[in-house]
Amino acid sequence: MSGRILLLDDDAALTSTLELGLSQRGYRVVTAGRADEAMRQLDAEDVDVVVTDLNMPGLGGIEFCERVSESHPDLPVIVLTAFGSYDSAVAAIRAGAYDFLSKPARLDVIAIAVERAAKHRALNREVKRLRVEVGSGGARLEGLVATSAAMQQVLDLVTRVAATPTSILVTGESGTGKEVLARAIHQRSGRTGPFVAINCAAMPESLLESELFGHARGAFTDAREARVGLFTEANGGTLLLDEIGDMPLSLQPKLLRVLQERKVRPVGARSEHAVDVRIIAATHRDLEELVEQGRFREDLFFRLNVVHLHLPPLRERTADILPLAHRFLTDFAARAGKAVKGLSAKAAEKLVSYDWPGNVRELSNCCERAVALTRYDEVGVDDLPDKVKSHTPTRVLVTGDAPSDFVTLDEVEKRYILRVLEAHRGNKTAAARTLGIERKTLYRKLEAWGASGSEESSP
Image: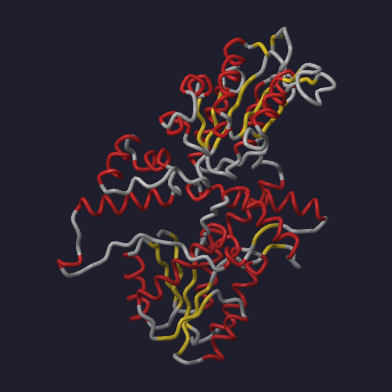
């Protein structure tokens, strides 16, 4: 950690011990022996956390907390109280203290409290910054939020390829925003035709063929009139083929021919006509794995995968969580006619620590619910879903003291790879990307361990 800590205590020995211990943990520490001296330092320089004794000569700890709360409302104050002094602790919290610790407090306990308070202040600052940025439209980019390095790379590719007619394959877990990205590409493309989207997994093969290519009158039962297909409807624009990995194998050659020839023959028609359509395909599946299984045509895969854009899951781009949340809160508050300004710092902490298995879609639903439930001008922890409020982040720990507690490097590798695969919910391509190894290498290791498992699970 880093940050500036102000220690206020008239006990010089305790102050010296805390100053040394916190400095060794990366903090810059300033000290004061009286409250009036501490107030002057707060006015003169920026401080992230204050640690103060409760009983001091002159201005006491309670009055000091009240003054800090009035003059520096976002500055967390940790109060050190006498052991068992419950009434004093309550009075300190009411006066605006962020936390309190009973004396004598161990250095490691104080360090943890300081770290938590520093993170709280940092989140508070981020929340305020985002309120200004989102309110002015600065966080918007055709519906996208890209604060994280991973999303910045995606947007860089979008900027470079948007104006070309090149086919694009967008991959990512369910709810990561693949259609939003496709719309952003279309808006930046300069194409004058419409943006048209179809979910290839949402309808049977016969109906999907008619939807894509159109049909002539009398082409099949109930075809009383000719119908224009989506390729023709999207002429001059962009066609999004969502969930392309679920397209029936028998229909894939027909799609490939349209992509190659840029001509469409409606079902039952004798002639074909030219179309100018930019194709964006999206899927949560591993198309390369489907090709190896014979469930997706390799030539169609290469035709679609000219440029590949991968949207990482929200848990891998946590820097985007708060900007997205503030954008959603602003939008939903406007629709509901409620004066919701944003998030409390504690609610922001909960959002950042949650894993978001449903990705951006789940975050959007969470924010819509919070706006509907909140009774105040900012969303608090109580307005969040129970699973978000009660979530405890998982950590992979390496522990052990005795030689028998340790394992071989091979076993460490095995456990780590299986943990990464679990985090990606069985998606071997994504796991291999995280691990920095080839997919075939990952397959070989899993087979050697007898852990190749079933087919990739759908998010």
